[in-house]
Image (cartoon, rainbow, N blue to C red; front, side, top):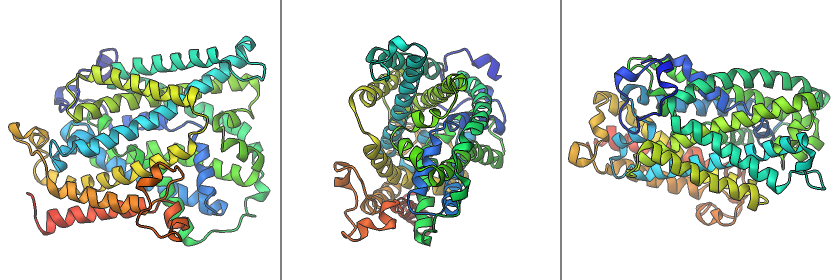
Length: 481
């Protein structure tokens, strides 16, 4: 079936394997989906964060790019499983954990997804409100900021268009993302002509180098900011490719689609950090307003529209994947029903961040670090299990309930995930006092201030622990066959 025939139909595929008759496309079709999702100039702030660890300009660039491509390649590897089985990634995880036990990683994947989308749509709402208030001065307050009515109207518009795309599913997302990829790429190139003059290139070599440990911390920080957050998404879109699609193409186009745009943006963010400390200070608090504030008005308007569209497209894919996650947990609803439920929940979260919260950066980054421990460990275990799944012929019966031929729980995967999560949560730190209750409990007071802890290298320690422990149980002890 061609993509043209499915674009305007509400998608009916949920957690079921996509039939071969409905598969279409090539690996390169994955590129625009991931590229358009990651082209937002918000990615420039990621370079600021990596540079802020204490690295030189060139170290920060290298650490960020390495971390991005390394973590994004893991997304591509997991996406191959979706091609072979036609299942969403978190549903295929039942092969490894069992039908009921898989609800554990699926729940945390769902929470991580929702957190990201809440942030994206909150930024889209505030960016739209800022644009409208500048075009219609009557929508401004006395201080020049968007009025509450302007902000609320922008919020409603963003949520509405996000729901439309998510409800219609894979076909409309694929078609829309292709257009967005080209438009956002073009406008970002034009933006660079205004952005680059803000960089003081004469200062790029003045920043001293950081230690090797700090450099490793930069790599890990980059991994947690991008690739590890997408681990449970890859197969959701790749599953529509023909079953015999070469794995290399799936991995390559998924990796490049995510890592290429964010790497370019990170490099710009690093250079901005070294060359423009005034703008750096503003960007650390209001990243989008600071970065669009350098533009002339004639370009500010269309570029703001592109930013909003890019963020809404990210929201569409997120609501779509969150709906699949609920189905994977066994929620007795249709894909349409779970998508609408997720849209409502994300709307409530976005409303809180937009209208209630006055500072969410510390809480959000701490939240992502904690979630990355669990989802990174799950991803490592699932990647090891792909070897076993291939040997078993990618038998989709392994994703079924016990009464239909599947397994309820595979203790090897559950134990591996639990131990890995304890190791990871115990060795990362949190700037949020509440999240701090479940982190850094394995660290001494001195170790809590080390680069290992503050750069969340414990995330990698958790991934290695989970993957190696599961491999030992599965291929050495041959437990729980």
